[in-house]
Image (cartoon, rainbow, N blue to C red; front, side):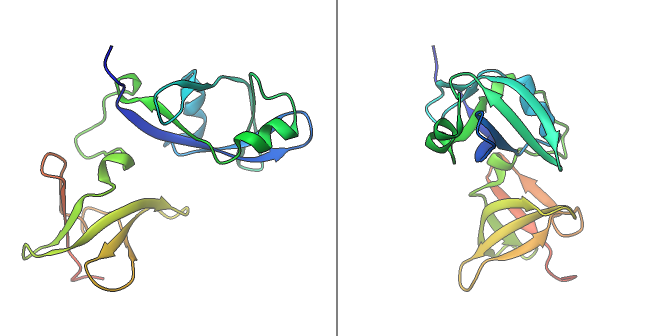
Length: 166
């Protein structure tokens, strides 16, 4: 059996109460869709978490899981990153990307000069932002739109950005 191609989809956050419930930060387009996958895997591709109950509370996903009976148990797994096998994910459209595929890609300007690397993709509520580490200087965000990012080449692991309108 081959090792799964893992996609980072969620992370265990803080305990909620004393009965083993905790916040689960889902990085899926629809945060609740993470519940469709069980078990969630650890970074080695091994089963790590089976969610038994879930609810929404103040815009956050609050869950209960097998083997997590109380707050102390939650504290032991706090911060754990959870994954699913790429093979279990639906096919995506041509103009859609999994964040994990973008991280680490080289960034080029429209003239073809390399200007940096994608460190992460964040979304604070107003759209996806590319977190770019330039070859020199501090990181910066660029709104991930067709105008700002005219080309994404997954095969060559390169992104072309147009900074003229920024």
